Image 1: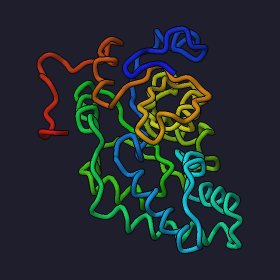
Image 2: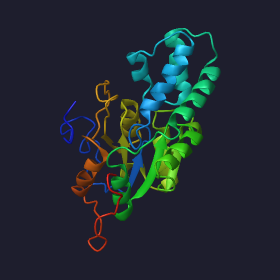
Image 3: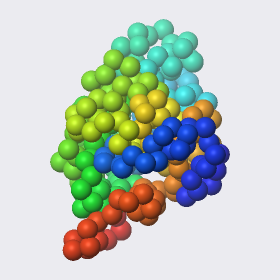
Image 4: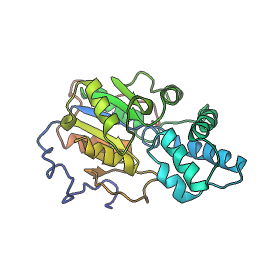
Length: 255
């Protein structure tokens, strides 16, 4: 799987193999949950609450199948895994309410998030959000962590026909940015998101968290990093940097 911070040289889906190494990076496309924002524990808490109401406990293998997916797709997994006699729509609607309640007042950005957003902006890159979350979840989450208005374009899970691991959401984000896919870098924590980014014809950096680092990774990313801050020197080796006159981006202490 590679080690944190190591580029995955020799992987079939690396930059060289896909002909991307000479294409300048012009845009960063961020996943949200588990990549920019530490929201996954609260989504997990909401599923635990929901399942206990119906006499079940959340199993790790079921949770693992849901990372990176949209709410309706996750609800379908839960219905099948536990044999629930409920419509998928009802499961999704209840989980929507439970998740929103769990998120409010509890969110924080993940390490390096503010620094990388600021770096990308100062370096003249276009910035986009591409999240499987519903629009109202994204609005709440970005507002809670002070990132509302940080992106030139946003794409949410309710705006595309197919969710991750299909590439639709990343392609939509690139279209809204006005940047071709080959010039975009995707930042993802989930295997489904990595697969989607690569399928979109984009570079992809995997930033696994405690919940996703041990999941099967069917598609190799171009690099694996311990956090978003570590992506900055990786970008600098590819010619992306802040103009000297601008100096380093200013971020709040601890961001």
